[in-house]
Length: 160
Image 1: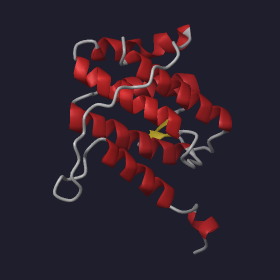
Image 2: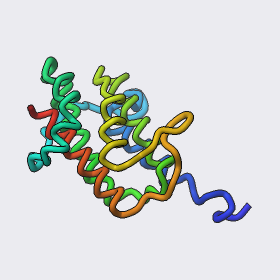
Image 3: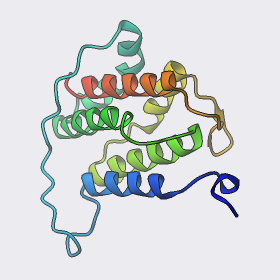
Image 4: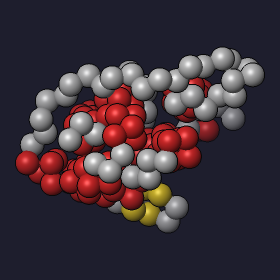
């Protein structure tokens, strides 16, 4: 089967998931020793009123745990920057990476914000829920920009 028939290479997806797992310290320490302190998040611009409204449920969840908030602020600032670097071609591929990141935050650090992140993405980017995840379509440059805006707003939420 040619690359075009199979939908492209899976390597960018596997590399992105591996980087997320490594960055979150989920690689067993007997393989690669990792001291995983929370890296201070870069200060992001205050989001628009619309985005503040969309991430308010995340602010409410994170305000009770400063360590989780710092982790989310740091990780989501990095996720926003990665939207320009990772060649994610469609919503299904993005959904897989987003789900892996959310599960890593939840399992590794107890930051259970998946439902709130999905709601913000659905409203701001226009993702539609399908059976088992988002309905698939090609990602546009505007979609990537809007995903980064949501991720920056989530980073901002972790600093509130």
